[in-house]
Amino acid sequence: MARGEWDFIAWLREKVASDPRLRVGIGDDTAVVTKGSSDLVVTCDMLVEGVHFDLSQCTPADVGRKAMNVNLSDIAAMAAHPRWAVVAVALPRDRGRGLAEGVYEGLSAAAERFGVTLIGGDTNSTPNGLVVSVTLIGEVTEKGAVLRSGAKPGDVLCVTGPLGYSLDGKHLAFTPRVREALLLHERYELHAMIDLSDGLASDLFHLTDESGCGAILEADAIPIRSGPADDRSPLEHALGDGEDFELLFALAEEEAKKLLEEQPLDSSGTHISEVGKATRTSEVLLRSGLRVEPLRREGFVHRW
Amino acid sequence: MARGEWDFIAWLREKVASDPRLRVGIGDDTAVVTKGSSDLVVTCDMLVEGVHFDLSQCTPADVGRKAMNVNLSDIAAMAAHPRWAVVAVALPRDRGRGLAEGVYEGLSAAAERFGVTLIGGDTNSTPNGLVVSVTLIGEVTEKGAVLRSGAKPGDVLCVTGPLGYSLDGKHLAFTPRVREALLLHERYELHAMIDLSDGLASDLFHLTDESGCGAILEADAIPIRSGPADDRSPLEHALGDGEDFELLFALAEEEAKKLLEEQPLDSSGTHISEVGKATRTSEVLLRSGLRVEPLRREGFVHRW
Image (cartoon, rainbow over all chains, first blue to last red; front, side):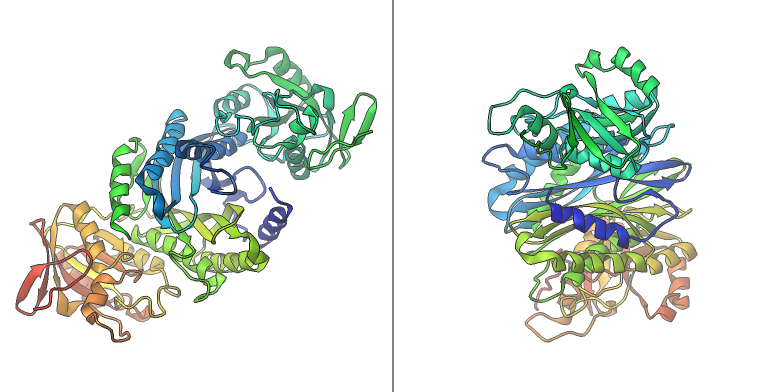
């Protein structure tokens, strides 16, 4: 995500009017609004051809599935139940109906897998590339949503799954952690959670910024996917790649100890790793062996 | 709206899974879902540069305002309260931040005017043109939503405002009939309603198709905006132009008589006109003087 985009979101956040029924606005994984006696979560993500995907490298169904899955990942980050989706597409005029059908096959397969009903949408033709925009509405559980903002100094930071090298096959075929998040939220007292879309380093900053705390990451504890060798280290891939769509969450030390012993997701193939702690300062640090240095949002690691 | 688009929506409608809490799916102005003890309405419209607007003919704020207003018009057609909006935009890389700010100024001005809170969104850069996609969530009143499907044979068909020639200034600067629809729904028993986005002829077919009835339109009774002379008659403009964003609604004869006498919207400058009746057949007819002919969806009128 370009730096300019973040400036824009900050600008927007200041401008957006306050609404007493808007519990959480711009700045979390989803918005949270109060409807009747409970809360709804709402999220929206758009995929743009030439920016987020290349149809010479993937199928229309891959694009549709990813468009739904990135939104499902945001709902997962709130530990909420995804329910209803609306979809707006701009379909290139010259590429026929097969493209549209492929996109919707992917969208609806992902929706069906997580019990989401496709309730409406808008179909347009365009002289330019394919655009797919999904809005997903969910419902929080009885325990409410898990926000980014609840981490406390001393909390243990955990992640699901190995991180990094998502472009090596995973970014189009990941499983949004909807069921995992609901199970964790039901069985443990989670203080804060975010999905890893921008990269562990960047998303950790989002969590600490919203929580008003700092953090220290343990480089040796970060689970890393294997991937092709290049000029960046595996650690840099895990910190900076983005599109992992795994979960980063914070919980109290005793609760974390219980969770890490029980490993409640192991039966579904998802191991949970402790990767660091929330701290009282506003710094976000990375410890590698005996060295401690400030973590960079981009995940770049200083070479000594 | 291109014919191919309608085929696609029909295809989609058949594929979309059923959900017991989805009261109204694809085929009305908005979807209606049941949440707790009441219903939510959800709608989504996308505007694409080069298809729906031309930035040499309008400002970025015009685009933002229209993107919000077309969604507000759909919520109006359900006679519901608009509440929350999420916005996804694809911003051309080479046209800078002013474009983004203009779009959001237009969006937020329209939202504020109707009490809508902008709760979130997604900002992307694109190598191609501007795309703005708005999803709007509303709440129905105690009387529920007014659907397209409730017209009964014998019902009187009414419209707000004069129709046609929207491209002559109105399509970028219309007022969505949110307040008018809520007032009408509160004071009268409306059987069915739709907003006029595709054109009176086309939208009347949507209403009769969903209601399972026919209709007869009275050409002389249709209120027509004045516009520049061209090779189409004023009546053809009123039937076929689209983007009026006025309301077409059906109600019982006695109720219509009361409404037409009271003209409850005159004080806000909106006159209501009776334009025809719903009928028992499946035909949709147009009466001009002594002649009665089948109405064409495109609004084209046979030259005698």
